[in-house]
Length: 457
Image (cartoon, rainbow, N blue to C red):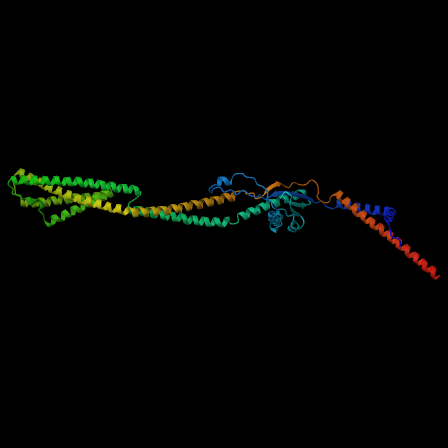
């Protein structure tokens, strides 16, 4: 059997041209009809990118003015870094959220056929949404972008609620400690008699100087009083009363008791004058007791002198009264000296204890300041959380939003016709060669049969 040449093939095509044309025409008509009959599918797309360095603003932290300055948001320069975002868009969670917004789009269709995602050559992300309604396709595409950004925002705020509860509880505990330690500090200052330690030290030195000056003045007055007593004694001796020098020391048990009481009262009065002031009820009560004790001493000494000195001379009587007054004055001054010395010793003891008091006082203040700083920081943290929660943070940069497409993405009439023509042409050629093969096979079979009949006949 002779092998077929290319020319023979062209002869077959030429001979069967009408069959080939008919098959091609039928395929094109069928493809065109399908393009007209099938419901059109519209496709909308969104282009965006996650920035390499997103804007992370801190409103209240140190250097926050730098964190909220504008900077350039460039795409990630690596396709591998974009893969997690495609994975998030393919997740069932976003599909469920979008399906809840648009019930026309089922979760299964969104996961299988209605959505596509790709990374462009410029390292941007592009998502496609397909639907029979152009507006729905655009809405779904934008919803996918919006829900992806929302999902990223929720992830960034994941621990904020639990942290906020911890911060609020800790703030309440710290404020309680501040109030407690402040009350203890006030009580400590009250018990130590200080409001301002430096001022207290200055006051102590001032009181010591006043007491020492008063002590010196009182000692001078004592000497002057003793001199006047001697003068009075001399005058009374000249008048023939025969009073001895020891008259000053005339004493009885009751008088000694009154003198001791006078000294104690003078000491208490001096201390009360320093601690409470001359208008305080304690000071006034002590002053009243002191005056009463002076009167009792005067009466007792006058009784002693009356029993010792007998005179009908008016001048001598006046000297005797002056002597009693001076003796009482001297004993009063002696009591004041004891009081002044007691106050000086008390202030000296207080001054010696102030370094330890200062250390304790400063330690307590430092503790309170530490708690206040912690409270202030916790308040800043809570305020920062409130600002961050109210902040609309964009984790993605939108380049092109989806718009309702003007033309359907599928089917495309010219493409369908082109495919119909190509498929029809291929089918026509196959049909033509099939017919040619069938015809030739039949012709060969008939010739063989004829030769067999002729040979046997």
